[in-house]
Image (cartoon, rainbow, N blue to C red; front, top):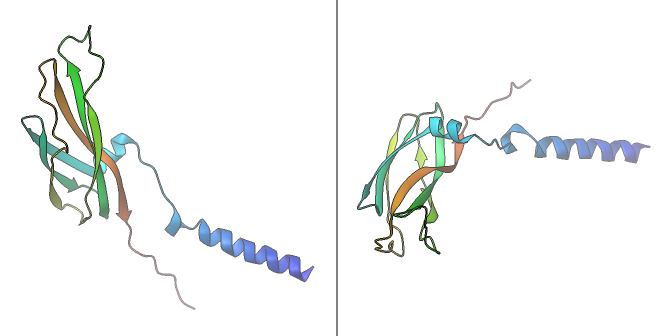
Length: 142
């Protein structure tokens, strides 16, 4: 009986520490993520993307990752070609951005986008992932 109680107590400790707030992860909607990270960007000839990321949350943000998409728009959309040259890439910025701080970024696709006359690229940048750094909570000592 005491072994069962001991194992139960040990399992309780393991599971409560495993599922604690420190290990919790939340998934934000696209709209919530866009409210947390404000992304402004411009393109150079629809290829090189330069921009700024602003942390609009009350907490620091660590290692933001961007989704850079080059959507292909066919010139004859009712008769599209066989192979769309559109592509996407994830760009990780190994930085910690403080509340209200703005960080610059530049992305150049490799290999370069093809020069075609049967359509055009429409670039888009959105937040893919990031971590919010919360201050540690201290427990009262007895």
